[in-house]
Image (cartoon, rainbow, N blue to C red):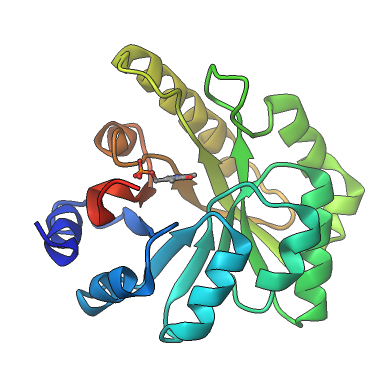
Length: 219
Ligand SMILES: *Cc1c(COP(=O)(O)O)cnc(C)c1O
């Protein structure tokens, strides 16, 4: 199937409240344009410089999502245009995003990335780190960021029960936050689910899925 066909077959079967991020990392602009021409407007990249290059070349009505791990010293390159940063996993990074957003006279929407997987290697905050960020005065004083939700990645495993447990854990954190009134937070996004597990993620309350290989083919 073509990129456009892959895209539409996923998109046409999504519930209305679930947004689709087309994860286009490593793929050439021609591939992204095929998805664009089929109606896709949200693209996800995991390297800032690659995203910047594509942003420069491509139509300006695209929303660019940074889904990868972000190095603090590179935030400035995406601050003028990034539409959502999924992988905010430290206070230091959040401070830098706020600073660069201020420099660009704008708000930058961020998701806090939670560590839900068993693997040691996956980035993310634990519950204590999350709570201490949200409770801090310094956080409340940040004027140029908005926390719009949470992001998480499940363990890469065939064990469905494991994945279900992790998605349900993330959803419970999200629900708990949503029930509170927190400065700088307007929670409407739960980013969970990739090509291999997005159907399960949606069952467990995902509102945003990040799909790469099922649209663009293997990398
Ligand atoms: C690459 C990537 C995806 C997409 O993965 P696929 O399995 O190709 O759908 C989703 N989320 C993150 C954070 C990624 O790095």
